[in-house]
Image (cartoon, rainbow, N blue to C red; front, side):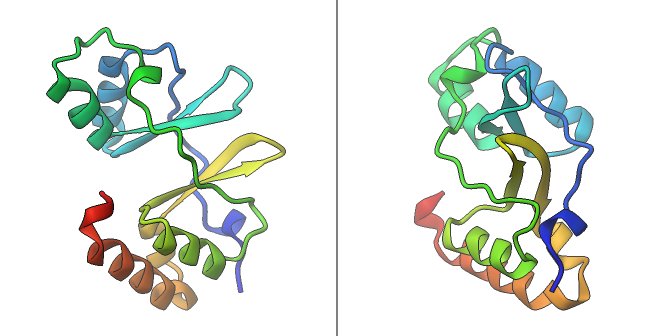
Length: 142
């Protein structure tokens, strides 16, 4: 079976923890994505900022656009390595109810795997379907 490095996206927009929630929202809009990894200057993965984080921890709490990402980002991280099998990555995504899985090598962000990436692989269609089914079945975790 393929490894995540064979299907991961590598053209990833990132934010820094001192960027603002407005910066994150604009990157999401420009890239048409719902999650942006938050990294240090040397690409160490510190967390992720999701559209849900922006809404629930940011704007719904009446935080201004100038609020730092570190104040609203998700820092409970699930990630894997580039050599992890697609099936294992899919299982990790299903178990942890996540739609995008950062790929980290030697402590540095090198890519991201999404459910869409999984679904493009013939052999991983079942894995993607399973992951989506697991994610969709447990709304209490979102």
